Length: 415
Image 1 (tube, rainbow, N blue to C red):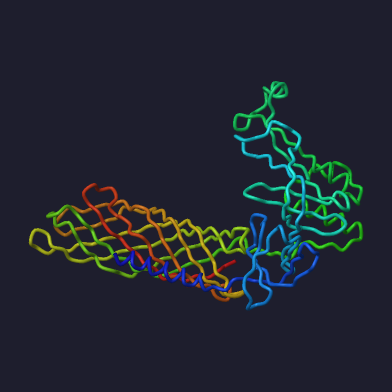
Image 2 (tube, rainbow, N blue to C red):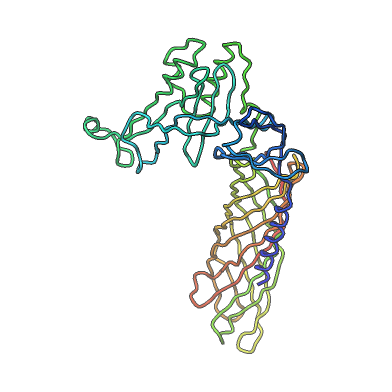
């Protein structure tokens, strides 16, 4: 019960912190339908999906206002990102194997969207992303924005019969329309490169940005690359020593005298954490993997048929927590974070040795862990973690155990 109480306290503390954490409103502007430019502070949520609205403040202490696509033609966070409202033709054909189009040509529908500006200049590059659908656009002419066409489709009918000796993917023959390469060759080719140069260009952000940047430089136009100054800390590796405060109680059938309370004991733990930062929402979310060694060994006395006997437990394990981390950035070097992980247990047999009765060799089950931490100076961290109960006698039908752990974990970021 104490373990669950600690978990509840942890979550209440975390939610109180995140509730009062400073929201990042950064300098920017928007342009309304009348063409008026309004300087303001825009909430930077590092949109993964292209937005249809945004929050802003006219001043630091003013109320939060919602800017919508119907009333705002353009908005930008200074030096970070820029979105423009455009009415474009977009092909939303799915790339999922069970929902592929059988048409090679794009199937356009006209929509009004916010496109993210990636590169400005003689030729500009834009991106649209929503729930896995990724499309790129460019200014084919001075006044029009068109999609760079890339489409995966299913080959059927007579054309598929010609491919009978080809290997299928997921039970279907796949075709690819890569018209974007011809579009780039015709329109974004100041250096007069041959078509062979464009055949190696992938329909990916970095690859396309390079094409547009080179073209603009060739034209002598000083363009703006909005991705140029975005530096993301994609991967972090930390060493994570700490102290576990672990307790163990075993339980058997009523009247069996198999219940033993080993009490709480502190023991050393050592882990190595790999953190993979997700590329959206201002680096607030990440996946963590932390292989950890821990050892719980203690002894006590227990009553057995009206006599007292010595009993000892020895439990060693390699734990593998895999989970998510959410960060609250206090400033550039100080961060509070919340972890939640599923903990897989790889252990030797848990040995419980009695002085005058049969010994036990148990197999531990998996559990969950929740942590609240603070990282300072972008290097050092301290975390308080609680884990749900784990049964160290999972291979016994009529026996059970309650192994609980709270931890204080220190961290040092290697890179």
